[in-house]
Length: 119
Image (cartoon, rainbow, N blue to C red):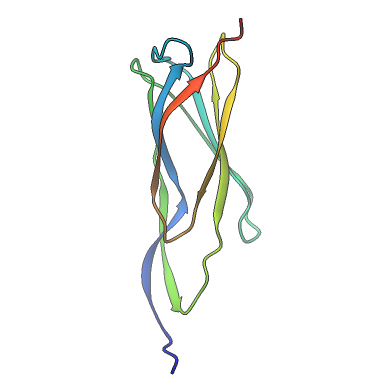
């Protein structure tokens, strides 16, 4: 027996990310580091890029984007995949993969992001 139907749903259009950027060797927070989230194209849309900077404690937050849509049962979700880039003067750029799906977590907590000093 199969069940079909549809209902409104608040989808994640772009996940948010949060965390703290710190020095790899000393664990000291890095203020004013650049954090960029680049998402890959999904369903023919252009990639989205969003940038913020860390505060005095090294903390950052890129808020998620959500949208309302119609969920059709049963339906598979296309995954949301991207890369978070971390840059600060005097440090080697860091990066990590970001993955979720439209019905998944809206904010991905990355924890401590450790950047290696250049010298």
